[in-house]
Image (cartoon, rainbow, N blue to C red; front, side):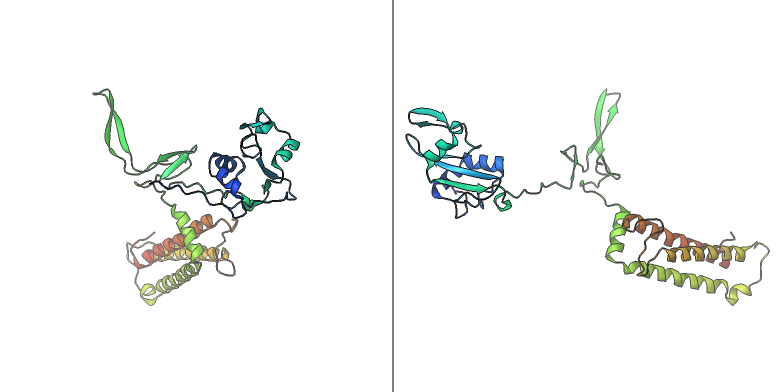
Amino acid sequence: MKRYIRASFDPSMPDWLKSSLSGNMGSLLKKKYGVALDKAKILYEKPDSSNVMPIYLLQTDYRDVVYIPGVNDDEKRDFNGRYRKLGSLAKSKLKELAGNRVVYIDLNDPNNKVTPREKYEDPRYTYNYGKPEYAGQYKTRRYNSDLGDYEDTGWSDSGKRGNRERRYRDKSGYVIPEPEDLLARYYEKFPNRITEKVDNVYLELRRVRDMIFSDDIISKPKTRDESSSIRNAMSYFTDAVEKYRTLLSKLDAEGNYVGLGYDRRLAKMNSESFSNDITRIKDDLKRAEDCATGKRDW
């Protein structure tokens, strides 16, 4: 046996209105005016509001009818032998036919309105121009001149790319994060990692400095094949020191990297620039060490 579950209403709603709003009239009221049927407060006296909806229970020649202006205006009933649309009745006539059977809904009260749900968008799809399209792995095709038609050539190595996306998606259709975005989020969540990297670079500077000026390097005889390895080592080391000092000038008092000439809100740009600065310093130190130990001479 089928069971029909009637929609729940606020306790303030009169019984004569519940049955009407359980059907099509309730759907129209919700769609047109955004009234939340399950929580709308029914008022028995007209509120002091600029946007009030009256609801009448009108006496007709045969039986009572619920009338909500703007909802069921075209519904027809017999009144004193005349078959008339509810929407054509004058306000004075409505009061006469309803008597004290009038209730109100304050449409300005946000508690009476439907809370819009956020539209779910599947992250595996692109929504170009609002049209969803699966962005995962797809079958590839090419033109076969012998057949005079296109033929399938297998599956793509990656997913598709949306109109405003820089990178192709993975095979399941999910967006592959930009490395710069991940780096920015990493530094934002763990700001102490910036301080650690700067401190580690400083220790590396000291190690390479001590190695270049060590007794083993200074007292080592210069070979005939050597040209200017120590001079080049010193040059690379000096470049690393200058870059390190420039890096320090881009840190604030708390050790956060702000980047010269950049708004500190641009975390993505700053984190990428910081990583590049660290890399360049390490590259110079590696060249300096290679020159000092004879692995390279330039």
